[in-house]
Amino acid sequence: MALLGLNETARPAVESPSPSGARRGSGPGRIRRLVLGLLLPLVLALGWEWAVRAGLASGRLLPPPGRILAALAGLAASGDLWVHVQATLLRVAAGFALGASLGIGAGALTGILPLARHLLDPGLQALRAVPSLAWVPLFILWLGILETPKVVLIAVGVFFPVYVGVSGAIASVDRKLVEVGRIFRLSKPALARRILLPAILPATLVALRTGLGLGFLFVVAAELMGASEGLGYLLVEGQQFGKPDQILAAIIAFALLGKAADTLLVVLTQPLLRWQDVARDVL
Amino acid sequence: MLTFQDVAKTYADGTRALAGITLSVAPGEIVALIGGSGCGKTTVLRLAAGLDRPSAGVIRLDGETIAEPHPGIGLVFQEARLLPWLTVAENVGFGLHHRPAAERRARVARALASVNLAEQAGRWPRDLSGGQQQRVAIARAFVADPRVLLLDEPFSALDAVTRADLHRHLLALWAQARPTILLVTHDVAEAVALADRAIVMRPRPGRIDAALTITPTRPSDPEAGLAARSALRARLEASLRAAP
Image (cartoon, rainbow over all chains, first blue to last red; front, side, top):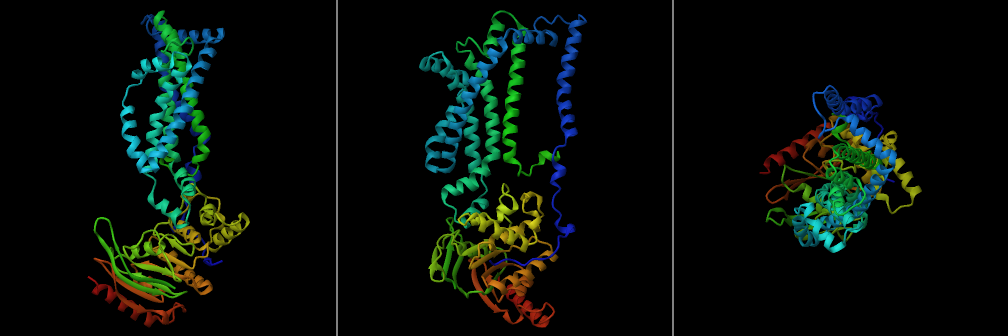
């Protein structure tokens, strides 16, 4: 085999590798970030609790954290909370799976094939501009009021950010990296698998996170379609029966579930992005 | 034998990048393409690599027309172009996908040892300096045993000491396996240090202006033939100055 017989030793002055280890978040750093993230909400919550207890505010329309937590604990103790959380999670999971799969497929198609791009993209971009609630009556008419229209509505919400993200990521893959694949005579499927797919992975994962967030946004609209369970149903019931503590308890449950789902997605996909050289770690 | 026969390249916007390039590079010969910016040096390399097709004329390797990337032709780009999601070892072995895993591992290990980066095998490209990345790119090109190696200013971003070391070892490699090397450079000293022959190119459209034989001074002791080397450099610089 023809190889360079290079024997020089490393020259730290001119060839010092970047200290990647120093960029990784340390344990104390993570705790500090967690504390910083919780600081403002905690101060506001405790301030409001104190204001209501001190009689400075009634807390009728905006209950203090103690009452909201009590409502949440009551729902949990009765088992209702789990029923509603489970219903919402199942709908989001099904809608996310459907919307993300279709979004990745359509994004890949329009990203790779110019004909598909010219054929599909204008129509999809127009549909993207349609407000989510505009679909509700149509889906009820077409699909009834059971689970199908809810899942489809969530899928619609997830589809568009994933589609735009994947399609845009493919369009912006570095030509120079594709040429590396060409020089080594990769077939088109191999080029897609070994160059395009890893190159678009970071943008795709961001698109999936955005899609997941929109999934939680759309599940509320979906649960307005005659649902009898789900966190969205708790919101509507709280409004109808004048129970702001229940509404806020449902909102908190939404926030916690959304954050947990996003964190899960990040944790599951982080190993795929170990190679990235990003500024986030040093900021 | 790598041959260019009356090769021209005109881009879709009408820009004439090359015209009438006729050139033969003998097996084992090192030819430097030298010239100012925009004289078509990189275009010549891209055509030889099969990344682009000529608008006219034909490029052949041992009689076989080059119209697309060829297994016997390797290319080292100006930038390392390592795939950031692959480790150093995976990058070096990137072009060996059709070979058995054991052979691939052995070749990659030897290649990395040869460029003194064996200890970096499991690291990401982001953890390497620019010079180290370029060494990985060179190892990636050599690991597949190309008959022709195209080098597109691969040393231009390196510091002088690393560049000189790589020059020496490239010549050692040439002496061992004698691959044909077509080297694009704008550095006269580099052309004199490495090449058997220097081809001076002129721009608008890119064409061959002059050819100088350098062989008598290479490969040799760096101290030997200093006067001859200086004279060649002066001649090459004069040719470049004469080019508009």
